[in-house]
Image 1: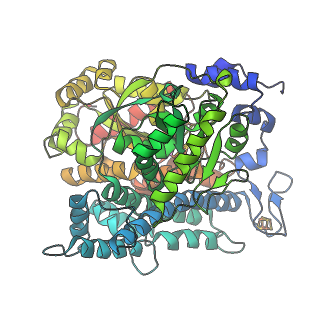
Image 2: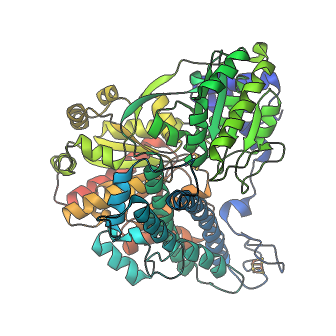
Length: 625
Ligand code: XCC
Ligand code: SF4
């Protein structure tokens, strides 16, 4: 072990994490925290974004002594190109997930699968109508075929605008057109970013960054939005219900299966399989009391939102969940899955199973899920888990903590229903200052922080100021473990928000889903803005990702800002080596798109910055701050 090792209490705020970190040490298991110690201090060139590896005249790194790369590119150009490609990774991740959802929907529409179907037909018809598809007197599958085609169009090169952009307030669409950042097609914008950042193309940092905004908008208003809407159509639109969270959701006497990744196409089938009587009988034959399914990260969010399946933990809990020694099998699809999980699993009896050809892990077993075999493959995976149960070593099992209750399932549809079908109560509450504004807190964990310290404290502080918090992604688990996702948590909110929550029977912190479901927040913002006849950037809204780590989180932040939502990040992306790029992000964008980023690692100071912005927006609307 290295000398930079942190105290366990400084690594995570949670008891379940701390107990498992201690067990990992006893069991000789290395975690992300250990490896961070080995990787720090980080390379300064990389950290500030001034290292360029785009061609083989380099690699070049910019310093006072060498201010230009071999080709003549300066720090601004290099930072902008690197950041553009970083954003492209995020946009590609969400959007390729969205494309997988269209392919599933397409297979359903063309009768190519019996394993998947349409759960929310009313929503399908509503969205088809919204997109101008004829629905009257038509067979549902005919409508579905047209809708699938229409959604594929938002990925291509032949449209001037992605389909869901019509949801955006008119003033903003005009602004986007004038700036040249109207998103045309997901694949086109991503490809164009790769082109622009090839050596010898876009050598104007601000111009590159504007394309980053366009590409991120294509993620938010197309790739992610399509993933969300189609997942609802295929698997059901979430409605409020209770669930549980933390490592205590694992069961000592049952076969434990964890699902990890993002796309419900895999996890929904695993859920069906664990409920089949013959598989439960097989588990009992092997000496288990049953089969227990729990989620991790965003696929956990998806299953919890729709089906109430408990959540074992967020990003930094994924290794620690295996350290319990109680997990027979972890099945993954893609994104945010640490390659170390194969290693950690092999220290116990845990089998890791991959399901997507685009995300294979050396050392894991590959069970490829396709549209026509999802159910059969899910049964196979569950059977594999059951076979592992007799191999579990009870002496090495430790399941810490009692689970915490939470409420989940706040789709926009559910939220509107709770308000009697119209956003008017929400708007009245904002006008009256009972709810001063809303903040969407999204995203990840990062071992550079004490795990969940910023996530949890930011949520707590904001609700005290009568600001409604909406959570998606890994921050959900933090809010849930902190007991803030239940209606009773309204007692920790300011008096106005407490009253509103009491009247509607909702928590002061609403769980809206996984990270692609940030599209729900965009849609809600647009709905409120349209209702008030203003731009999204005029609303007392903000976004935050305090402990972010991924390219996807940066893309989310960028589409939030480009959509007019002031966005807080706990730490900057690797852009600080360019004054132009940093200046645009922190200030310049405000004049162009009506919002910008702010950076603050302390959750209490971040609360002040967000609060100040909400005050400003309220005053501009002529409301009490
Ligand atoms: Fe990944 Fe989506 Fe971040 Fe969690 S929140 S660490 S991106 S799983 Ni999306
Ligand atoms: Fe160096 Fe320019 Fe090549 Fe980058 S593109 S590696 S700065 S020569």
